[in-house]
Image 1 (tube, rainbow, N blue to C red):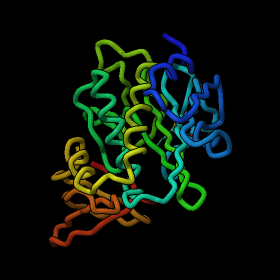
Image 2 (image 1 turned 30 degrees about the horizontal axis):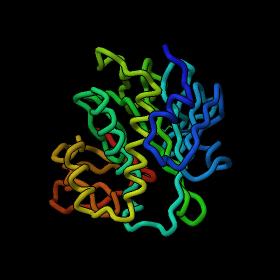
Image 3 (image 1 turned 45 degrees about the horizontal axis):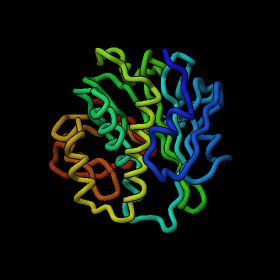
Image 4 (image 1 turned 120 degrees about the horizontal axis):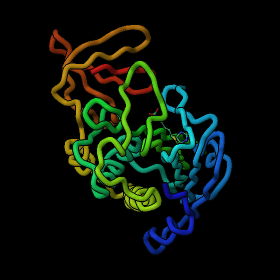
Length: 252
Ligand code: BTN
């Protein structure tokens, strides 16, 4: 399996890409490193993370087995209107990159887990600092083996679903190029652009799910998301309620 190569990735990025590519053998967390170091536009990659972080305070197991642990730091001059949708937009962007790299049959489980069938291939953690003007986008993508494990998901890796797994450096460059497009255009992006992308990749709308929030369980049919990226759930009595992702677990 090919090693991560910062020069190769940098050479594949669009002309004018504003940041540098930092590659490490081992880090605690690429998100933590970029929150403390690096400049706007920089990317950080590690072959292995010792304290990889997931959403809702969970650990992201990150062994050195050829998976992708990638973070990108971005700075906005003014927080764009669609910033509350950023973590969902990143999911849409990564789905597109994976499609362009040959993966089929994947989609998004709200808010931004990437699945094939019921198997989670990738997770995204977006963290903000500095009054919402600096964001660090973290992506964990199982390429060769399944890193994380928990009772809530069945897991999968690209290798299971692709006859030919792309070179990780090519894949990373494609993901970063698409994220760059998204981030540089975010100030001009319209809600209808988000809706179009979301409808293309959303796996949950129309499905029955259960949500657990603060030990309370809600069941119903998913009716898409609202303008803040909250999931809309229609319960049996017909009422539609919006739930945000902060402290929520979702079963499908
Ligand atoms: C999830 O819980 O689904 C999100 C997981 C995000 C993991 C990635 S791996 C690269 C980056 N660095 C981290 O510590 N976390 C993110």
